[in-house]
Image (cartoon, rainbow, N blue to C red; front, side, top):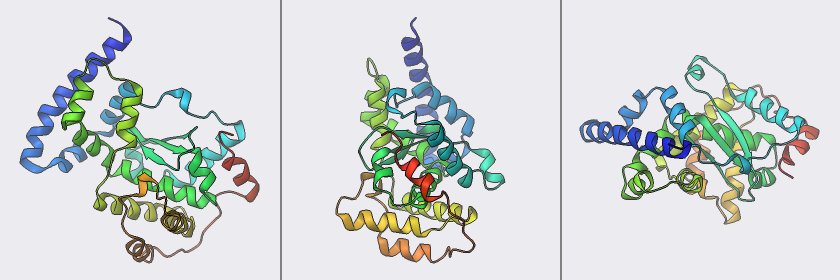
Length: 257
């Protein structure tokens, strides 16, 4: 068998197992308790099989830009012992869309269009912290399993062939409930506070996107600005440190150019 055929066979076998177990648990308790019980290592293994985003779409960046991305992540992770349960890999996509999304196994993608719209590294840190919260709260795995259990998902899993583009579309179009988005917002604010990152960047980015009339799809199901502002009040800034210098931000913002 070819590598592609082996991968398809593995996915189908795993999908049947997940479907059978998942349906039984969902009928009894709902999907959330089941998802939280799945070891993150299993999720990482599944992510390695699917690999929806082609490497060609990921910008390599310069040595300095990659170092700055690592520096940004170093501010946000790890922050406490709970972070040892998860791992994250962040990539910049060569796309003009203003978007960010997470995939299984802690893979997070930020479009260069979002970097160009952002006005500070603190804004990018807020978006990144939000996506990290989706991962750590297992929203990605939960959303994936829910989508798989739909007719469209079954067609994707058990169809004659599955392309990377189809898998990527599943994650990019994965909608979250308003309560999940609120959880991710709260998790982001908690992370920013622990990292001593000014959360005004988080606030400014969301407000500006809402006022622009062109709210990115990944923000469309978020709580209202009023609700978010009330939540931000619960996480007052204390001592904060800049994420990058002005010169570093200029270099980082030019990722993919």
